[in-house]
Every structure is written in structure tokens, then in C-alpha cells.
Amino acid sequence: MTNSLPPSSLPAGGPELNVEELAPLWGISEYTLREWAGQGLIPGALQRGGRWRFPAQPRLKAPVRPGADIGTDFQLVDLGAYPLTPHAVAFRWHCAEATIRSWARAGRMRPRVWLPRGWRFADRVKLASEPAPRRRGRRGGLPEGRTGDGEAHGGAIAPAPEAPNAPAPLRALAALRYQALRRGAPR
Image (cartoon, rainbow, N blue to C red; front, side, top):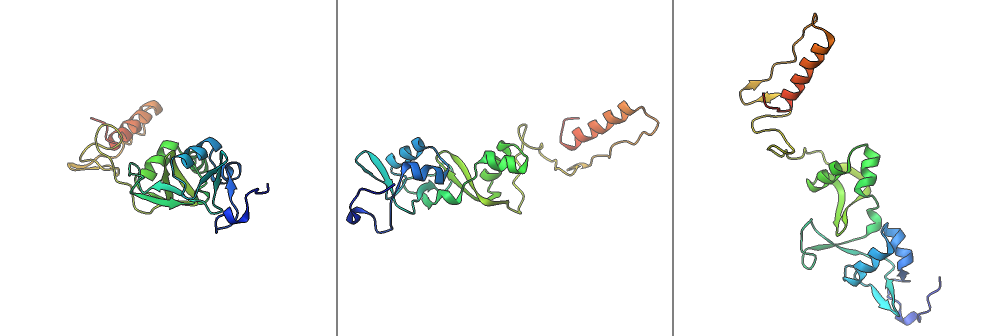
């Protein structure tokens, strides 16, 4: 597509991009791109004759962290460098999207960026080597005093009982009870 604007009106960075060209590069819809441009999240975006024009190397104002004020705490991000969504990473790693989002919130996945529409990840995304902090309480973690290795403040949980003469269903039940105790179920 040729640009009908005179060369003097083009930015110094080179040719401009329109909505139809930039949206597929960033992996977002044209509607979202127009919305972000209207909100001023893309520096250098200009609307001429009812059409949005973007610089050749556009950047998006993204919050530094979830919940940060976009007016003061932002970073300029090239969305082309972060093509993966939590869904794509979950599909690649064979796990749940919620797991990917929780790892991203905990800071275990890098490189990543938080956008107004959720997390995005680079192609070379990896898990950080440090373990994620464990949440405690009834929902989403082990009870106080328990760790994941079967140890408790009062001592170790006994291993699953070996009953070679017991019927198979009873052996399975004993193993299941052991696993439940190990994960912190009440006795």
C-alpha cells in the first residue's frame, strides 16, 4: 500500500504503519489497537483523516507491574517481542493457563510483560530457578507447619504401610491415605 502523504509529513523514523499492518504483527485485534491508540498508549500514533498511523518501530506503554498507574509507572514495550499468550505457553508446556498466570504473577517466568489485556511472553520464555513462594491456608497451599516433603513441625509422617498380604484395594487405600496426609489433609 502506498502512502499518499507528502514525504515531509512522515516521521523521521521511516515509513508509517496502519492498523491493518500493525495488528497482526502484535497479535492483537484491530479494534484493540485502535482503542489503545485512542487512549494514548502508543506514543507517536497519529490519526489523520480518520485513520490511525503508527511509527515504523511502534512501542506500547505497558505498566511496570499489574496494578501500576500507567500515567507514571510504565515501560515502552515492543509487542512483537512478546508474541505468546498464557494459552500458547500452557499448550506448549502441557499445563493449565491458571498455572502459567500464577507463575507470571510470582515472577517465575521471564521474559514477560503485563499489558492492559493480560500477560504476554517472549518466545524464549523460561521458568526462573528460584522456587515460587508457597501460599498458606485452606485454599491454594499447605497448612501451617507442613512442607511438601512430608515433614511437619512434630516430626515426619510415617511412610505408607507395607501390607503384602492385604488385598489390592486395601493397599491402594493405604497409599491414598498416605498421599493425603503428605499433602496436608487433616487427620
